Image (cartoon, rainbow, N blue to C red):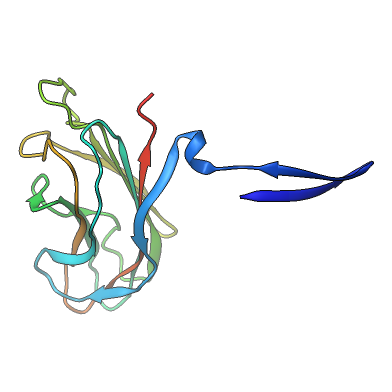
Length: 177
């Protein structure tokens, strides 16, 4: 992008390309998806990606929870066809109230033979206006080691009277050097 800004002698053109700063958006959607299912399921798929194993990945998910019961909502992640961890993790509390927030998945490079410690290289951070913040992680076991072609957001409500809404999903790769 080029931005033209005024200065004392006229204008100065500044050029900025976010990919030169280490972050590149590789896919996403702003389409809203909702569910009242109490069973973990695929909600949003960002397909046709080509993310190399050496690339760290950042996935940003906007979500909402309706009122209707003392219940929460949970989000999970699937890379290609592999469901990670024991699936969905709670991102809200179970208070009977509306809530909205953001969940961020940070995925370390998927290199063979790499020791990533207890966290398994996949961290989850969630924050909503009602419940505050939470953090969790997925184990490295079963994590795809090759190219990521699909990032799938999974989720469920813990009570069918509460609606989980996905307000947008954005997938970014981070610099490898």
